[in-house]
Image (cartoon, rainbow, N blue to C red; front, side, top):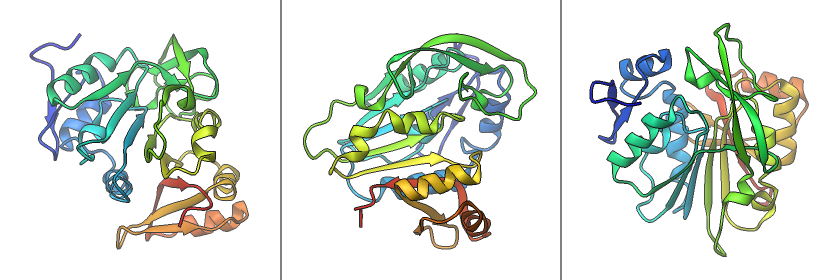
Length: 257
């Protein structure tokens, strides 16, 4: 459990992020002022600025650095999903001290309402995920627990016209999250989903570009650039450009301008 002596970092927004002193990722966060992936944070800020979102969702919140370190519309409803019992005590404390009205849901998000094995990396918390889809190159010991799983569609009680912005970082379960969000992504409401694609193979990225309007960020300008539907080989060549931040992609509907 968190203690008064536990480490924390104060991010750009002035909010404290409490972290597990036994987690190497936590120590990296402290050393880097609460930001491990500046490009991802920059992209997240750009997505949040696309329009005045009514609902902002963080799936795979970890210590909360993305949601607590960003400028979110003051009247937006904020929902965080995090199932890991190793980081939840610290995330709860950070949210409580932030004073933000964040709805923390201690469940995983996937393709169906169920229970599933969740494997926790005992050294680097950011490499934890649902066992069936877990991807990691880590040689660290994994610790498994059973966690509740919900779909995004089952968890979002949306009003007509609500605009929804979602961040997804789930270490391999991205397509399951999308499967469980079909009602959201098929709707005419404004929506955007930012997800990590770094570990996806070229065919998976090609699938995203075919099924959605997919964007990546121009590092030089911060603008979002549309990734056209293309073969896996063509997409691999395109995303290899040094001028692109290709760790994450932003998905919107094909009809979105």
